Image 1 (tube, rainbow, N blue to C red):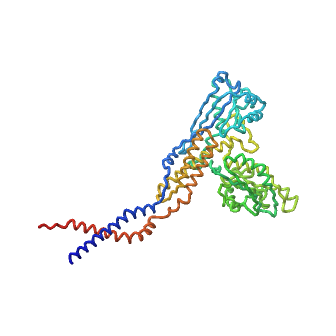
Image 2 (image 1 turned 45 degrees about the vertical axis):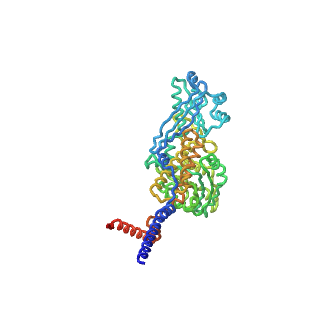
Length: 555
């Protein structure tokens, strides 16, 4: 009986050891991997190497220039060399990690019969009208016509002419170095119509170091898919002024044609409002000599904040908002004038704020107060007002007056208020700005995800990153090929995808889930199960070790 009891006890001990080993094996081999897999942070793969390579991206901005030579524009020996192609490339000296090179590809050829006929017209406007008929040029491309040195198409004191569309005229010469001299003139004209250092510096103002070169370039709006424009009439004294303005007709006649011409750069929405009892918030200074009130230049920044709280247009907007305010001063502060930094009255009696909009002060004619009782009916001269607002709108979009070469005649804008090559120049700048913004966004996102390992990277976020990288590469290729329209579209897609990935809400789900919270959750779960298993394993190990050291009996 004693032997049977001992055998049963030994069997129970062996069974207990096997059970402990089985539970430990299940916990280690099955439980831990299953727990690790089900609680790990999902992180889809991202093209980190391609994103890091974007910082060393070199942009080659190719401007196709067709140079057309008329008869007697260059010596006969040079005309026999036509057609051929000349490439002029130079690097834009900007303090930016992305290297930018501008490449003018000049394709020289002889003038066709209709071009010869058009360029023999009496005026350059007639020639332009005849040259526009056969074909329309692609975005970003230019055509330069080289006319005879003694042609009457241009005034004799002018060596070149820049038209409202994508065409220009340059005088030729009978010289053995005609091609070299004319080629330099053509590059100067092409640069004025397309890419200059100032244009690119303004586009990259947010990405350049803070210095005097870039500080004054921060006036234009940042690139966006859409813009909202609000025209506001501020009447702080409705008891004295009954102001009427035909804003609908003014927008239809002056603003809408300009926005239609600018539609390739984004979508626009226009609205208007009238605000009563809206004060500027700054007390003007009275000048007894002229019996007028003045706003000094250093007080102008303080004018915007009190007024902006009344506008209410940018609170619920997804796009940048441009505010244009027409302020009719109250009777107690009339007339009101704006002074420049030298103390002289501003001719337009208006000022603009970078990336915000503009304000114009509209004074009521003093004779109107003598003619009738209060309130005085005021009919706003919308032509004068829209001239100021359109000029401010051009500046806020970065459409500044070009720096033309010496002795160059610059044509006035078309009826839309925008030259075709000005739109192309804006698209060049916005394409470069979009690529810089998308590259910076992706680089910041990659650095953030590399530093914080518990951020979830979902598949849709990864797909947006891949799409943004592909769009950047495509836009750079299209810019190098001279396809401006497709390059701009690809750059917009790059910005949209990169920002959609960067601001995806799923990136924040586990961002604020520190390790101490993990221990607080998992220790009550694993500790009651792990302690018995570990104690059993330790006991088994000690008993096995003791049995190995126990000496064997010998007879």
